[in-house]
Amino acid sequence: MSNTHNPYDKNEKTVAGYTKKRYNEHMHRILFVCHGNICRSPMAEFIMKDAVRRAGCARDFEIASAATSTEELGHDTHPGTKQQLDAHGIPHTPRRARQLTAHDGAHYDLLIGMDGENRFYMRRICGTDAEHKIHLLLEYCGESRDVADPWYTGNFTQTFADIDRGCRALLAALTKQ
View 1 (cartoon, rainbow, N blue to C red):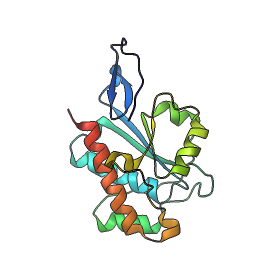
View 2 (view 1 turned 120 degrees about the vertical axis):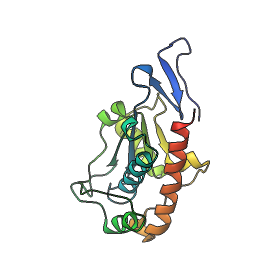
View 3 (view 1 turned 180 degrees about the horizontal axis):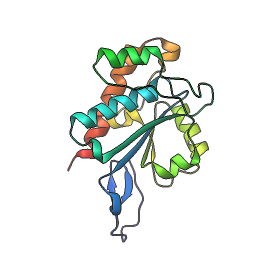
View 4 (view 1 turned 90 degrees about the vertical axis):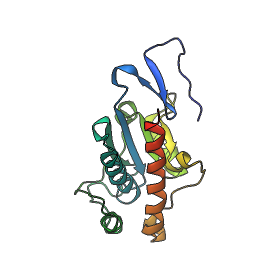
């Protein structure tokens, strides 16, 4: 992943493909994004929250999720996603789908989309990505493919496997010394 930053600014450092200001170098703010914020992005949110908790670094992370569309606003996590999280012992809480905002683009260090269409709309909503914050989840696994949307495929098991692998790779990239 390419990263552009001012090499003369001693208050910046590069972490997992993005630049962070040193004043808060240990806090990683991650927003997972999908089309409706009921299947893939909340699955990633809860998987990542569980992973950082198990790694003992939950206090170093702010993790949330959002949608690019307005179609599912206010709805809770899809039952198929909840079923996969339960099957793997990953805690989840009731929530309401929300849409990505331009403010999110400024607030979060990383905006992680699930597919190319998500990335397109993330850039449209947040504006230019001069800080290289917008990525696809499977990039962290060295893959250039999308996480399939189980709303259409019905295959929540495969989606869980892809998101779990992507979140593990992302956590490894963010926590490596």
